[in-house]
Image 1 (cartoon, helix red, strand yellow):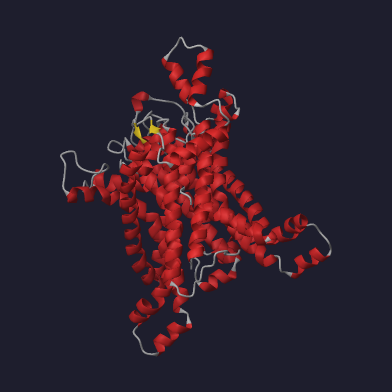
Image 2 (tube, each protein chain N blue to C red):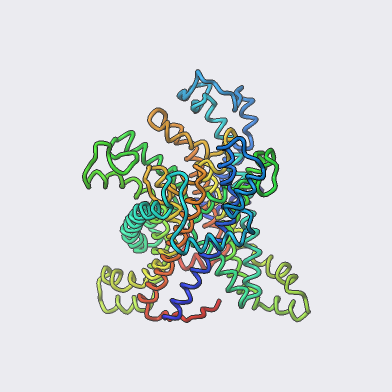
Length: 322
Length: 302
């Protein structure tokens, strides 16, 4: 188990290292470069000066050397400066990451809270009217463009009904906890929609399969009520694959957070990455991307470990084969 | 005879998927007929009319006009050409990459399989939208393209197709790998091997044709994903750029105008939604029709 964990951690680190190299390469492919910006400030600059400036900044060195230098600084906690916010990138990430984690955490909780009962209702009578209804809603959920869902929710709840704010994190005149919560309703609903659909579909399939197993027949023949059979016997086994799905879904939740935060003006990591790209602040954008990827990989790993804890049959070995 | 073929397909796929296929055909035909519609309505899709901004639906403009006074219906039709073309082309590209990877992994097996599938899993697990956004910001002139070429419509479309294909292949790769894994133990593949054919020839001539069903299903489902990715990238201003309309970028300005003209936010989204729902329904029904096991397990649509 420990060896497996170590192996997976090493794997995640390798992925991150590769991604950081790609990110650094990309940094060089973004529009404009630091010298261009300085040159723009001094119209009388000569080409020798430019060469001297480049040498001073280390820009005349080969790419791999610059990457190692950057990596060394990054490992020491120096992720550079954000041009857009004139703040160290690390400070920005530390301030905005928690917001995104709250958003994703709430969306996950809502998604599970809706998907569990929906899947149980659908699996009770496969092919029945309720099952078809749930199935149709699931198709809608995985097919709706999240940004459009956000627009429709804003039109419905902010413009037409006026019940909820259309964006931001708190009202202009300041507000209590309730006000902040109201600002989170639409973003969380938008982000949760696709996950609800995905979890429901998987859980429904797993439940139907579990309800056909021998141990369920045994439980039924013991005379246990259908409720107990479903809740205590089938559901517990059906939940297992969903744990893996939760881990795999994190990446799309982070992607979804980017759209949701941008649409609803929530200053989290997703909006920060987007604003950074649009504002030519590539250092911030790439570090943001790396942080998002790292969080996703860790979440993935956590899901796999939870899976092993929940299912005693699973034994992870250090070298999992094909 | 055509009626008979459609009847047969309806029986195999079910009424829902048949309706979905019909919707897709209608959308594709409507988008293809955009220039014709322009002629019939006697309007110019690109004509700006600053005195007729945000006009409600009328006899002249059936769906009204947008923030620059352009006819919304015509823009939707032209946008559909772009969105649907990008969707199909990028899905086919993603599927081709996925098929090659899946075939190699499934047929070669062992270490190559483990490595390729680990890579596919890694791509699936990454937060793809932030990655795509960063990749979409790459300055193509730094890759050696002239500024004119980098700004041309063909290059921008091509860039979008490449980006979406780069993240869209793993699903196909997994499905094709699973098919190849089971096929490599079959007698006819063993026979080909004893005849001394090269692995490449066996993979392409013997395994690939028999994996056609999962490839078809994966490509269909990929179209839905790709249309979603295209729309969100274009919406965020990093995909198809105006004045070329796409269903995604037509929604870009809609959020600011949501109080004045919510109509603008509805139509392009309805069309994206209809396309993706239809593609997903069709893909699911195809999977059930082509793989009898999934129907019996009850994991599919019905």
